[in-house]
Length: 379
Image 1 (cartoon, rainbow, N blue to C red):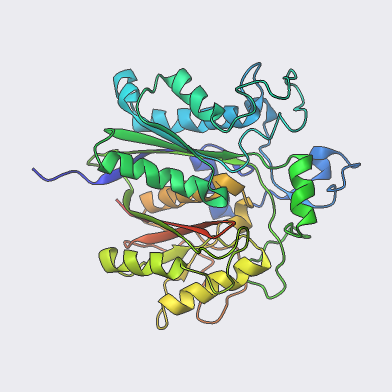
Image 2 (cartoon, rainbow, N blue to C red; image 1 turned 135 degrees about the horizontal axis):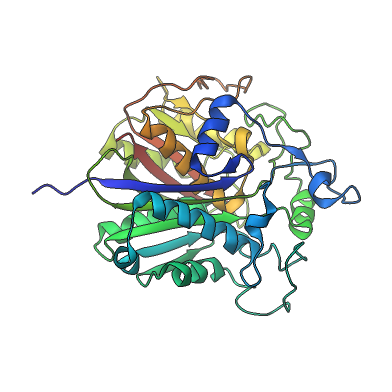
């Protein structure tokens, strides 16, 4: 008897575009942009008041007497994905859990969180990366393999990849991947700004010659993964490597990302489309086109950018964008690009939701040269 395909049976999403995966899908198709001046969130006296950002509108979703704001966001998307997958208590008990985050519980720890009672600075579990994972296991009764990843901006994509591997190797019959980051914390924003990484304007155009920064945004996502027949998007491949080049930098030539793509192509064929990291920083604006030109010297797959719609959700970005891609692939479509985005030589960024039936390659990168690739396809 043939093994069922490795399927994405449940999705969860929370971002400035709305609550739930369908809110993200509808908003992107409608071209809705959530960016606002950070002064509306942090106050006009904030040094970042005029900088753009994107945040979860319903702040009540992030407040709890015990759990941190990031944990509350993680619990919300986990609940959505579990409900969509239809897992019962026995299935949850056997499941694996992998959580990805870059900034952990900085929100509500490095600074006060409005509406939430204060915690002592070093009070566990509020100050550790693993609190969201612990809370998910407690709230849903998950007792299988449990991992927390903090591989920078690739953490969310890595969470999906490790969750895949746990199921593929038989360590768990199913797995839940979750990612969350709430980076709109004054101390974090101070450091991003001091490093020259923040965008100045609301119009994110990652491949424009003068692009110079990202728009920070809050977000969380979840993906339920298991072998199951049915009308579900499928996971084909995960890979990661390191550039072994710089402790924080990203090589302008794309580093070893091309090797990830070439290995996947050998197994799964040419991609129908690529969703690159495309943060908006100057170095990423050079690295992405350099990689694609090297791997695809002739006809190139279409390129689909999601951060111009949702901003950069840091450690959540890879999984949040993969979840959005999966929602589009469920209907046999690719997400549109925001009109007016710059196209480097040889790259095509269609502004309409194209139909597809081939694999889609999603890339994420963490500072310090960590590269990750996830390959998804239609049902």
